[in-house]
Length: 624
Image 1 (cartoon, rainbow, N blue to C red):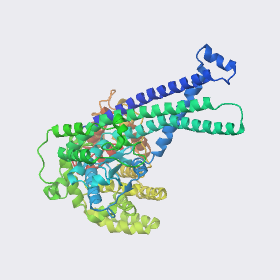
Image 2 (cartoon, rainbow, N blue to C red):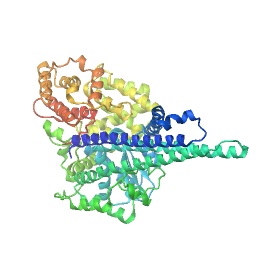
Image 3 (cartoon, helix red, strand yellow):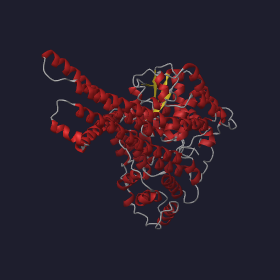
C-alpha cells in the first residue's frame, strides 16, 4: 500500500466530487427556474406587464434571483450538515445511537474489539480512534471523521459476536479507509446530499403554507386560489427529491469505487482473505441492516449495505457481496505467518532487549502509513508487553492526562521536581498520578514504546470537557517552557496534544512543493538544529535534506535558529500539510535524510522523525 499515492487518489476523487456537485446544483437550478417560469406564465392573477418579459422571451433578472435563492438553499442545507459534523467521527457515531465502549465496562466481545483496534493503531502509527457500538444484530461497521485525529470506528453488536479473525478483517477494512484518505471524502458526501435535499424541504414548507392558506381562505370565503402556490410547492418538493436521488447516486458511485480498494488493503494488512470473506459470507446469510434513523444519510460509510429497503439496490453504496467475496477468494494468499502471540516476536525486535537496530532513511519513508501482518503482530506484542499501569491509565479521561504530560518531563532531577511542583499547584491529584506513573514510564523503551501510549490515550483525552481541555493544554505549555527553551521534540509533542484536543486544524489548501520552498527550509532548518551543536554538522544535515527535494534554484541559506522557532515552524507545518503526494513524499524523505545525515536513523532520531511526520499528517509506526 502506497500511503502517499492513496492520499493523492482520494484528493482527486474529492476534486471530481466538486465537479459532479456543481453539475448537480446546476441541474437543480435549471429545474427550479423552469418551474417558476411556467408558474408565472400560467398565473392569471399577475398583471399583464409582469407577464410581458416571459411572453416575449427569457427574463434574466428572474433567472438570476431564482438561481441565487436555489444556491443559498442548497449551500445552507449543506453548511448546516457540515457544521453538525464538526465533531468528526464521534458526532456521526452518536447520531446513529452509538455508545462508546471502554475496557473497564465492556464485555468480553467489546474488549476483544478494542484490543484489535489498539493493535492496528500501534501498527499503523495513527492515533487510536474511539470505538462505538450500535445495538443492531446486523453485521456491519464504519469509520468516520475528517482526519485520523478525529476519526471514530463504529461496530454493530452483531459484528462483535463474530470470530476474532473475521472481526479483525472488518476492522482492517475500516482502517484502510482511514489510511487511504477516504473519510474526508465520505464526510463531504453527507453534506452534498443534505444540501440537495434542502430544496425538497423548502418545497414541503411552501406546500404546507399553501394548503393552510387555502383552508383559511375557504373558511373566510376570501377571493384568490392557493392552487398556483400549491403547484410551486409540489414542484419544488419533486425537484428536491430529484436532487436527493441524484445525491444518493453520487454517494453510491463514489463509495463503490473505494470499497474494492479497502477490501484488498484489509487482506494486505492481515494476510488473511478468509477473515473478511468469512464476514461477508455471514452477511450474505444473515444481513447487515442498521435500524438507526439516520442510517440512510451515512449508508456509504458502512462496511456493507446498511439499508433494508428494496429501493436501496437502486442506489447501492457497495458492490454486490458475491463480487466482493469472489475477488477476495481470488487474491493470491502469501505464506501465512504461524501464530499471533506476543511470545513469537523477539523482544529485541521492539527495542525491549538487545541493542536497538539502526534504520535507513528510505526504509522509514517507505513505512509511512503502511501495515502488514508483521506489524500487526508487533503491535499486539507491544500492547501485551506494555506495563499495565500505563495502559490502564491511557484508557480513562482523567488519568490519560498524565500520559500526555509524561513525555514533557525532564530527565534532570531538579527540573523534574520543579515541574511536578508546578503540576501540584494546578492539580494536586494529577501531580500524585504523575509521580506514581513516572518510574513506570522510565522503564519503558523510550524510542519505540512511549509515543504509542500517547496515541492509545487519544480517545480518552478527546472525551475531556472543553474547560478540562483548555486547562490541560495550558499545563502542557507551561511544562514545555519550564526551562525557557522549547525543543523541536517538545514542540511536536505539544502540537500533537493540541491536535488531539481539537486545538489545531491544519490548512487544507492544495499546493506543490516548489511553491512552499521557504516553509520546507524552515522545517529542515529546525531538524538540522537537532543534529548537534557544531554549525558544520547542522549545515551538513540541512544540505543532506535539501538535496532530496529537487527544487529548482539551488540550496538556499540555512535559516537561523530564530527563524526556525515555534512562531515560524507552526505556520510552516500547517501550510505544508496541503502538499500533493509527490511533494509530501519528497518532504518526509528530506526530513529523514536530514535526521540521518550519517546515512542511518538511530532510534532516538526515528522518534523525532515520527513526531515531525505526524505534524504533516503522515503516520510512521514505532517499528519499521
